[in-house]
Image (tube, rainbow, N blue to C red):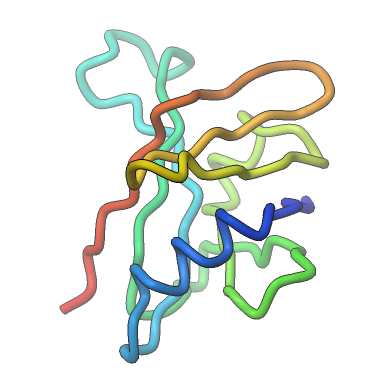
Length: 109
């Protein structure tokens, strides 16, 4: 899996990460959506990858991961952009728009 980050997205993620170590986990959140195949994408800042995580390729120094069970919900090549006026992100692929108001939640200890 590969995510191309725009310059704006990379800057906002680096700002969110700050000086603390961490990785960005791409998630497919199904809580409250009724069914396991209905969900919304999200970004979570985590302390470190777990054994269930797969590395996501980027050309950025920002580390991206995805849970191997959730990887099926995403296409192989995607693009992440950021809204310059807010901390909202947009995730797209050649086949679909995943979301235009994706939030980053910092879950680090």
